[in-house]
Length: 227
Image (cartoon, rainbow, N blue to C red):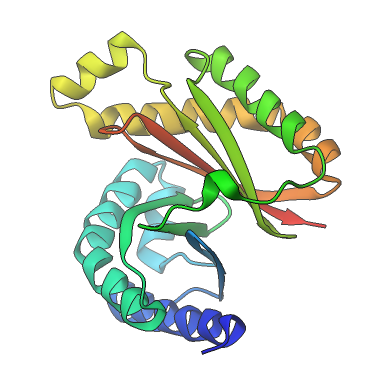
């Protein structure tokens, strides 16, 4: 199957699945396949109940409910993508922007080709800016690299970013609390540096998401762009 058709198939499947399980589907679903990544961006996705909770400053409850729901759907989505792409998925990440009613799912195939990815304009500047941002929050990453999946989707990967205090929180079983705190702080700092990213990319950043793999000390940031 052609990649464009496969992207449409996966987009339609995700839309139906979210509608069936959340009671309301997203306005749009955009799937991008660029090995080793499958990136899925959903917009206008917020149920009436969630909207009520957000209106009452209860975003944490919305986040936790969605975490539970996505946890039950993860294997089903993986199986669908694997059966249609004939590739095995090794990692899964997701994040929500509740203010903008949007979200992202990111799947990574076992055949990791990221290190061999093509360059793009100002790639080194983007990665250097991310290193500076990371130092401002915690410490310099052991490695930082990125891939422009298409003109609308950029992924930046950092490895080796956790400080000793964070590792101790994880060891004590506070991973969920740590992730909520890190996500809020990191997005605040990204927003402060957004103009630099937009200048280097020659595109407006209309959305961005962050998630971590604490076991592997790895972070993924996904930028949605408007060229």
